[in-house]
Length: 204
Ligand code: ATP
Image (cartoon, rainbow, N blue to C red; front, side, top):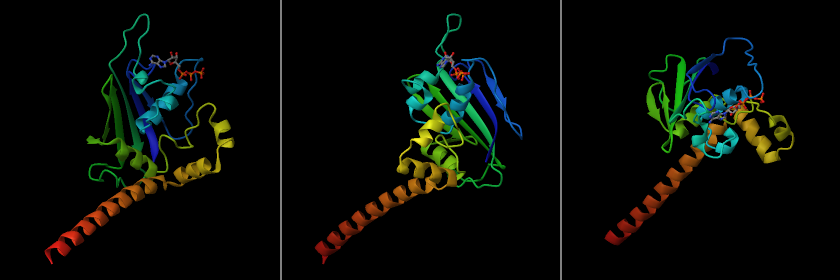
C-alpha cells in the first residue's frame, strides 16, 4: 500500500482544507518550528485509527479539532482523508467490490460526538480500519511512522513491545485480532452446545 494523498480540514493547525500529495520518490516537509510538520504525521496516524489522545499530543480526542486563535473561531469538526494505492492488495476487511485499486479512508470527528469512519464510500468501524492497515503491514502504530522521540523509544522498548513492532512490520498484527474474534465465537458456540446437551438430556 502506498499513500498518495492526504487531505485535512480543521485538523489541529490545518483550519483551511489542505492537501498533501505524496509523489513517487522522496517527499520532504520543511517549515519553521511550530508550522505543523508533526501535525501532518499525526493526521496519518489519526486517520489510520489512532485511539490514544496522548499519542496525538492531546488531552482528549476533541483536541485534534482546530481550537481557534485570536483571529479565528474554533471549528466544530475535523476531518482527514487518506488516499492510498492498494498495489494489488485485496481489501478483505470491507469487501473488495468498489476498490478500483485505490483505498480512500475518511475519519471525521465532531466536537462531543466522537469519530466516524468511511472506507471507499462505506461507513465502517474503527476496527475495520485498523484491520485494513494491519493487513497492509502498516497502521497508526507502524514503525514506518517515526515521530520525534520514537528512536529512543525503540531502543528502550521491552522485548514484548519489540515483538509487537516486528509483527506489525510483517503484516500479521491483524491475525491476532481475528484470532481473538474467532476464539470468542468458539466459546459462544461451545456454551450453546452445552445448553443444547442439557435440553436434549431433559427431553430424553
Ligand atoms: P517543530 O519543528 O517545532 O517540531 P512542527 O512543525 O512539527 O514543529 P507541530 O508540532 O506539528 O509543528 O505544530 C504545532 C502547532 O500546531 C502549534 O502552533 C499548535 O498551536 C498548533 N496546534 C496543535 N493543535 C491545535 C489545535 N487543536 N488547534 C489549533 N492549533 C493547534
